[in-house]
Image 1 (cartoon, rainbow, N blue to C red):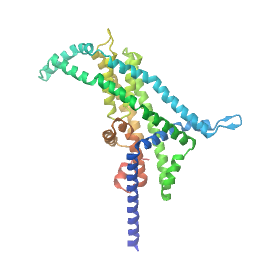
Image 2 (cartoon, rainbow, N blue to C red):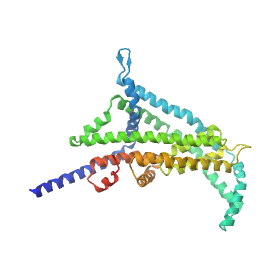
Image 3 (cartoon, rainbow, N blue to C red):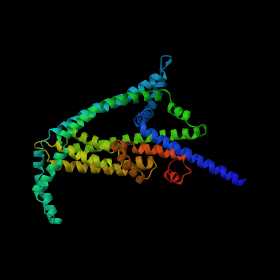
Image 4 (cartoon, rainbow, N blue to C red):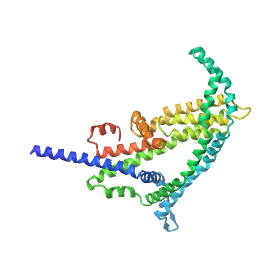
Length: 376
């Protein structure tokens, strides 16, 4: 009798593994073939979650004796969402486009001439302490060639053309996300109902717990990332303005660092390089030299990174997401290799979703238990 029970238990366990593997394969296939649509749904879901308190508040109001209908509250949520997005673009897009124009029209010869003295000092330092015979002329030639490759006007024009070429796709995405988000706000729990309709009845509790946990963790994550970006932007902008930078220049560097700092570990280095390149456009006649500007930007970014790494980032990525830093680093690199910058941006929330689903449906696997041991 015991052998029969053991056989039945083993068979049930293998059936569960098989079901989990099939579900994982189906999920991967859906993401692979319908990635854009899945992204629209996920982004709409996240925005709906963020707007839900406002929608609930509006829906509880009364106009005279008539209660505000849920569809009207959802419409207010969508409008508020787009007002915030439009306000962001109105504030920062002119700033960014102005700096791109400055880069195109930058006098590289004057900029390189201002670096002649620092290059001489660098050559002397290398020759004295490392016995490397490097002349000022060769260093200047190397720097000139590097700058010309980076600031190739044709390449900049290609970038602008690419931006216009994807404008149609962005418009489609905006309409699609707005439409989906409206119905997610209008019918609270709609996404969960859709999942429960396609999931086997015996897994209803698992699906419900997974959705609740995903909602909670992603809401906490995106709120934390928003606060992190704002803190980085304000620190960098404030310090640079104390050094005499114009407000528009200081906030431009702050925006670059704030946006790229969303990408764990790798993003700050990308933002650091871009900030340095942008700093070359800040040099005006009679003001600081290029070398001093780059040094001030480097020091400011390092200070902001110190504050972020020791006070802000650990609370968001390691503690809030309950994942080991090495996990996050590897996942970020893999996502970047597969999907570039976009993949790196969504790597952490996507990995969080995978871990929660694995804990609910594949917890019998030892690897899953180890990876999800710190999750609540």
